[in-house]
Length: 383
Image 1: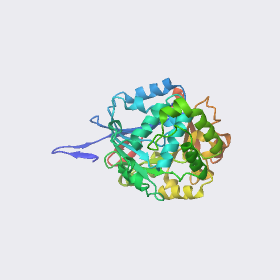
Image 2 (image 1 turned 60 degrees about the vertical axis):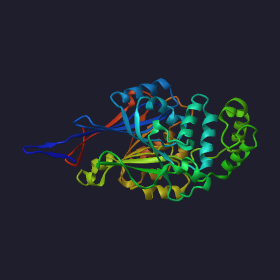
Image 3 (image 1 turned 180 degrees about the horizontal axis):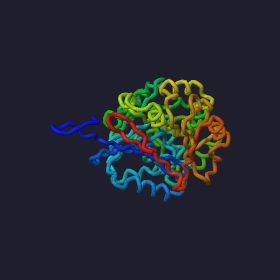
Image 4 (image 1 turned 120 degrees about the vertical axis):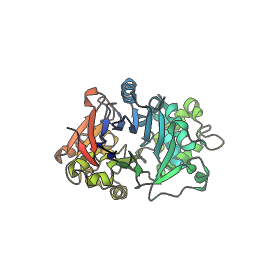
């Protein structure tokens, strides 16, 4: 409630809302913190990882955790190292209430694990352990709290084996539904862009079975064997079969937005600016059906702040992101990355549309904060 009543006074409750885009280079680390007058906190994190100097990410995590004992919602967009490498440090000594992840069919879980094991020598086992805990562990991992799996509207049926697995027993929420945030004032809407593996991915997974020692007797990845014994063979197979394939076959986007009641009592421009779409490595380029699903899930024209997906890669961009009135875009990118991110033409598209664009790099001065007050059921931008 925005007002507290007693016999003699009406006392207004102020709620401070801080959204931070942390400068971690080639990665992503975004946080939202709601703070009441009495010091009560509600904390949300979307991704925490980087391929840039790990000390930079560590410093940002330490700064964020100062005074924080609990993360109320942890969103993980996908399981590439540059989005999850900081989770171990982030979660150390912290209580997580709930973690939200995209639903992935068993083939996609296996493919995600192989991609990490082949691509990243550093932290490969750490990132693999996170995937195993969240999707394959029989026990709900304590450090992640309650695990919610976001299923898609057009791919909701699990195989019989998956239904009986630990993953199948996770609590599921439907794409397009909202997850309650701070009290009744804020909410989050996840979108799972997972697609059924294309033929190249299926061929690769089939070939993986033919590599002696790549799978154990239960058909699960033999991680230590891949790392120490047959990594070269698996990598050669992956390079041969998956050449040109989309490596971003899944990601979970999340919109952060004021609740309907809060939006109704607030200035429309402030509401639009405060609505933020985190996109991870969302890839709808050339996939019109996915884009149509995406825009049906979200009132995209009403969103004023948008993360440009995959560090500004041209392979994940489409000009329809510019539909509607100009908005504020941001890109998290390392200044020395070897992927040529962000793409020149992506940046040009945004500038030509007279939208603003902010680059969040590993340099401390590129950190961006968006500050608001919530008072008397009204959202107010802090100038």
